[in-house]
Length: 85
Image (cartoon, rainbow, N blue to C red; front, side):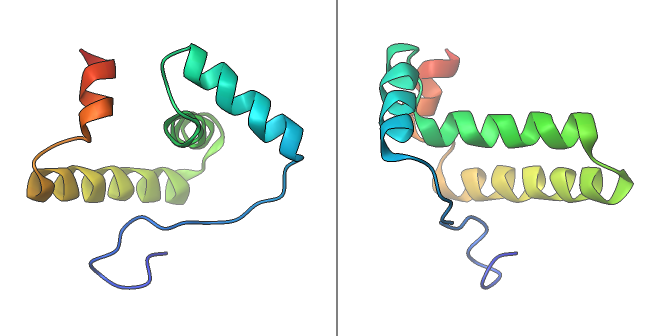
């Protein structure tokens, strides 16, 4: 959960072999995306497929938080806007 009401996203750590992380980065870049966006998309899809009622509600709430944040900040980041166009 967010540290406070103003911070809806956070940085987290996980362990992955450095070579795999590097290969993932270059493969994602070649596909025109970045690792962070791809990971968030994967997590969304995973929760949609495997989540229970509570987890799906959390996903919906998280999507609302992101939409509100983007509305305050002027929309999606420039790179994400270019990719979705």
